[in-house]
Length: 121
Image (tube, rainbow, N blue to C red):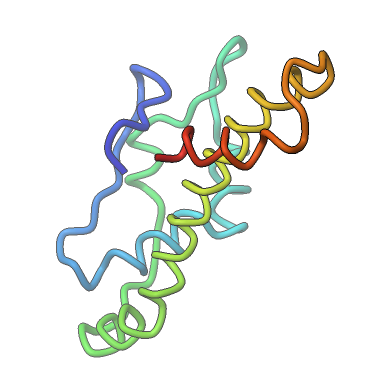
């Protein structure tokens, strides 16, 4: 996604074609991949994985037909994951705004619905 830079030292993984999107996502976010790269992270203050370590990762690439079928089967799931992450971010922002106001009684339960409607609009 655009706008998600967390550091100035990073490598971006992008599929070369549309049908590789889901394969790349699930390959890069699998528990095995996360654990492997976590063990290879380097640096004391800010552990990071160097791009050449990522590039040296071996992976089995399926045929175009299998990749296309996988993409068609999982595309909806990846889109849902992305949408749910966005919704979670909005809900967390609302919680940060509303909870202190509720505790300090600057807003009451009856006002929350209209407040949320304005915040989401």
